[in-house]
Image (tube, rainbow, N blue to C red; front, side, top):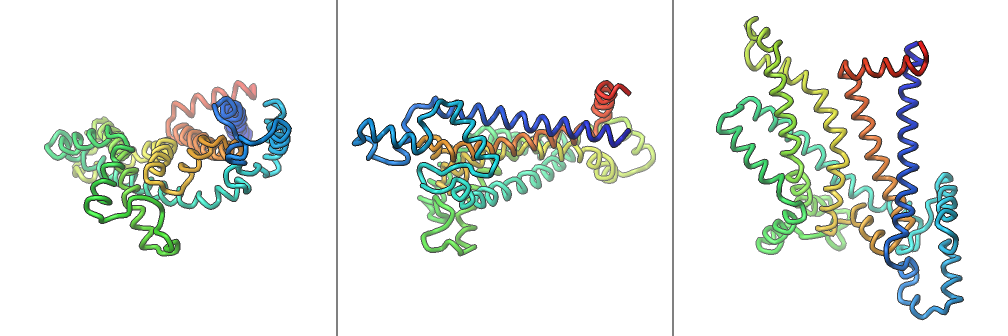
Length: 335
């Protein structure tokens, strides 16, 4: 019975994932072709203006752009299922090879930023909950509110002006200096400002959620019982409140991935950091359809998977969700 329920439960999640990816791929494929611009310019450059109608028709046929949009999508889907996502019009190479050269930079920037965001948000949340309504809590809340309202692109420009142009402490753009591709110290210097922006742009939003979740536990009835038994405030906070709030913290981490990923893409653009964010912008700007499709699918699948993961975590830790799940499963199986 339990195995059957688990099979139905995870099967439903997998079906949601597949349908979501299908809808996403169709939407991106059609919308990208509605955008103004000529994809032939991305591939052939200025030569397109000198092409005769016959040469232009041959060029479109070569890139598969002469067929109706739905036919183009079916061709793309068939090739994608075999692992062939086509070539990049701008880079004249397989889109998988183009992305493989950039994805490491995004994972490094986004990964470090993600870890710092949630390590610091947990510490700030605990600190604010411990000193609730005291001067330290009020100061952190006010400073955090201000920093979270500053747009990431504006914060990036201010840091570039201050630390790169005026003080000349840090490089203003790129992932490494010319000729220093394998210099770890040089790469670390190029990461400092982008990471600062990524962290400050998201830190307080999640720290505030952690703070409020811990305070909900602090005001729960079992805390009064624990205190009546002689347990210290520190023991109640860390043995009970923090432990009970931790599953929600994990769920917040899963939900936050799209938010942090979007912020990372913006930061990459401002700092000219060679990652997936700059590739996404270039592919949209130059109508590089194949590259745009794969980037959109990668980002979309990551967002969908994290959303489903967060839902699974909530359903496992919240008895209300588990009860609803059991009712739905019994209705499906008829048991």
